[in-house]
Image 1 (cartoon, one colour):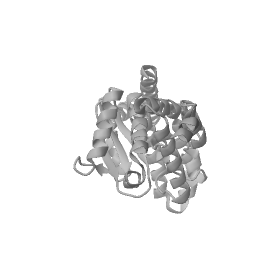
Image 2 (image 1 turned 180 degrees about the vertical axis):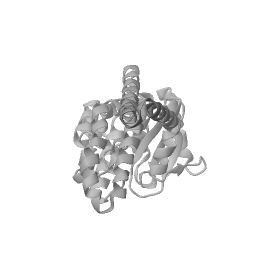
Image 3 (image 1 turned 30 degrees about the vertical axis):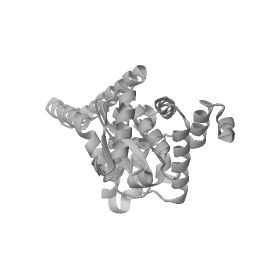
Image 4 (image 1 turned 45 degrees about the horizontal axis):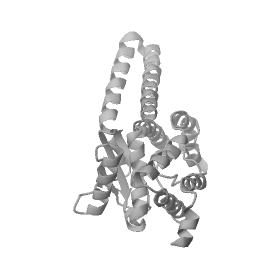
Length: 278
């Protein structure tokens, strides 16, 4: 897990340096050293602000608000227990006020993070499945996946939203900016991060079946209910909530749910016999 965290930090620094270098090159070509200095300084200032406040930006993008302890004491106590096991500070808990079941994590890492769950997930998931989802998101927090995810998601989402100013030329702008937005997503976010988070969640919960059942429930919900949001936010969620077509297909980073469930079941190879005996 420490190796994964170090790798994610290196990815973030590489991404920041690449963006600053690209903007600096534009500044140099447009106005020489004075403009280059201004552009690089503003880029570094924006990077620092993003590091400290990206979680709030992401929560604002999905319309989440903080979930008070009195509203869901069981969810808070479950998260606190799992966070103690994972050796991370208890994340702030947010709720997304819509019925589509989903969850994601954001923040700076083990010492400062937040987890958002939707009303749909709170209403549909049994305690064991909700525990599995929370443990999965805590795994991303512990490995600092959230730092990398936030950076590329905010960058990609900003480019996708920028196409809206094109009016009649919006489709052309999407055609031009879509691949640019999707490139860092696929370059920096490997599907392996989801397998690693699943394994760690199974260890935290002392069973892989709660998360496996939750993944199947979330997959079924995605087939029954159309999900609409900025497709660049796909890497944030526990599973891919978008239809894998059109623009959304460009940002898909999650491995197939069936493969993830199969790997989780393999962690407890005798589960069928236990189920028959129960």
